[in-house]
Image (cartoon, rainbow, N blue to C red; front, top):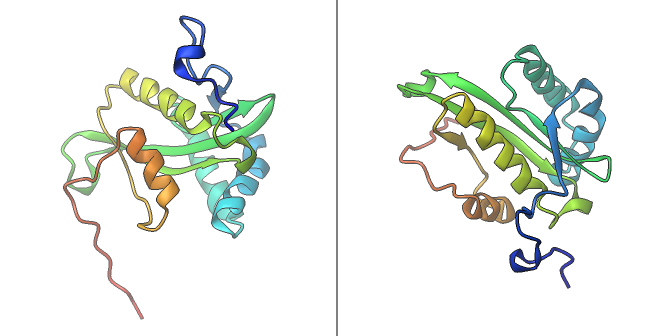
Length: 163
């Protein structure tokens, strides 16, 4: 049984993501981000996430790393960055590095609200494309990205094992 209102049940002018407050990430969000990430990955990545949060804080004019709140609690986060011509791209692109939603907040449109705000912020900067990478076996995340309009890119990601 879903507690999520159906689109036709909402009052006119109301979005399904209106219950989610999206804001810029703050240094005080680190513990909650680490907890959400650990719940999905199975391991604490505090140093990695701390570094990503510091990078997001350094470039305060570009608000593309976001936090989502439900009922006053951090319910999700999104870490992204801008690239201006790197990796052979002639135009600037945004790379969605990490997205996480608290398991208790699943089904409450947190990820959708984060992506909606990211798209709005990027459009204001003239950025026309977002790229991300997903592990082939993360079916739930792949489904989320597919529903959000992402498609396979016409590039191959290559790797070389250094055994």
